[in-house]
Image 1 (cartoon, one colour):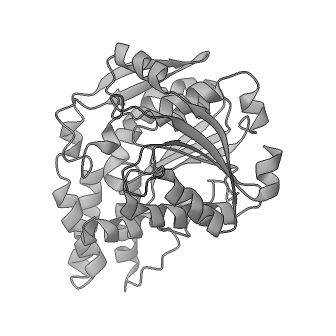
Image 2 (cartoon, rainbow, N blue to C red):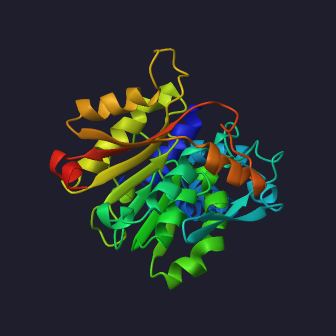
Length: 328
């Protein structure tokens, strides 16, 4: 990942960072730019950061942010040809908004963030089985999704009875995430759930994303197909350990492919689960599911599934304090 991207992600995802600038005007410009990134308005963000840089031409963080925003130019245009698809799981459905398949180059470093991967629909199908929502305490919960992509898991959990759901990903994914939240928010509001999106860089260990909007810790952290790049596993584990450490009752629910890309002759996810155990947390596998049925249903709906052609299983894990894991 380019240094400018890491700097942008660090600045916009850590709300507690003290920005040492000389004037109230400059502070406001920087804060307004950060807020615009969070809601996916990259054009306005670029304007505010440019005004901040004019007041403080030697502010290297702002210069790096502007450089990355300029590189991301045209993201909103690329989303103009969105296609919306209704995906069913159990008695519920999620509206999936996706860009045209040939227009994903600027939304992420590759197409991984803008494609659907097996772990997400499999997790929603599994959660919709009778008794699962109550057993895991999802009803009324505060839920944070990591590496959300489209926000499919987050939107689905919102419709399963969660009280608050925040989806998170890289800043350049915010327009796509926001489009998906808007497509589902009316139904989620009827269910009594508040939806939000925020940028969160793996490796971050403090700041706004680590508590819910009401300053209470998250009850549940969820993620699907997170182990796609070995270089990022350490950062992902760091963030997960920090999130689980905020509150003894917080648990993580992870839907992970057992594919072997990293050359360890074991599922890639074992790199992550072993780091969580090293961090002092209990990890337990709850299910191992063949994703072919879920993938076929998505294929018939016209949705591209990134790992549909590979033979693999989706393993669902729970992680957290030993007592919390056993209680779930």
